[in-house]
Length: 548
Image (tube, rainbow, N blue to C red; front, side, top):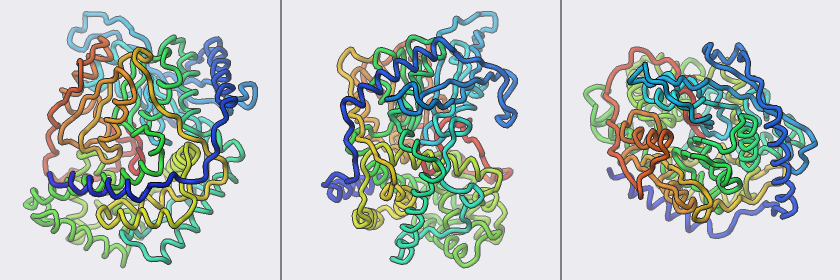
């Protein structure tokens, strides 16, 4: 496909515009790091002694009867483990011990498999449901499947930055080349949002970081009674999984990193977001080419350029009059951005666009309109996303840097560039000190062999990140799904990928060097039976659209 050339050009542009390191950092003091390490050991010892009292789950989780839920206590600030404590919610489904291919064979338990779906800001509480799917039954036979809500998420000391009732601003615009007045309005919003995070979440806001997520994971390990952790992280979960591997390599049993964030500390998070925007342009091109190949079904044009023209026509129409008063260009862009994460979304999005241009807005409204029922969850998720990324590392504090970098990038990658920039802009005005990113790195023999899974055309976490993760974690092995772009591939439709995943988790077996699988088939063009919203795509196996 032609899109990689565009991504390479955009990536080169990023490297030339970011020669200077972003300002606004607070260096980490070695004494503080030592205190946090000691604090983690203290908290883990307490958690092992206390365990987790699993019982019935809260009714609003809507979990099956096999689910058990509990909480684990962790320090808000690991440098002061005797200070304020927060409680993380945890879910578990016990290993079934049943071989799906031979019901008479009892499978021995291997321990717990803890999962994080990414975000930052996504909850893994529903992850144990995955054990009911055919692709996961062998793993579910050997492992207790454990999900949890990281600090700040859901019931786990939730963060908030605005009144949830005012979070969704719909309809909204989505200019690919915004005017100066539009930029000024978004700057004002970003400043207010950053201050709202401090006002609504308090001085503890600074402790919602990826490093603390990694420390929380070690406390959870101890609370579950595990000497060594078996962990699978997707998307953002790969980043703090890699932090965990760097901080606690001897505590790792097996680790799967699915759709890897580039862990280079110079790229956390400002540069990573620019590279994500560049990669989404390539995936948007893939989607448009797919629609064009199925012009007989959707009638949106028989070339990618004609499909773009159809999309632009719909956006202009929505700018003049929002569909159902709720869906404007911003909501249209959001619906199509999610298709950049999951190609099984392609048929429903293409059909909704086709029907809208023919006068039927119903399918698009059902896909894209925000709902009051999801506002609180979405606001909380966005607050955690912002807090963690803003706290983790330095960001440019001069608007001119953001304006220059994103203006140049938008010339070759207009689809997501400015939307991504404005989403992250509160980090330019962040009201609490930020950290320096940890140098993720392990030496030979320090860490058990780990498995990295990556689709070659993943837009949310571009492929270069997996290569960098593979280079930094000694003994890791990278398995690539070639010429595919789904975000989060473990336990999905590719049986070759799943074979490597099962061999590793069930037998500890990895290929000797990098391996690859042919991409899974593209979705079939079809007219969906309905356009119901997928509230928890892939049982929350990856973070929400717009995030990692």
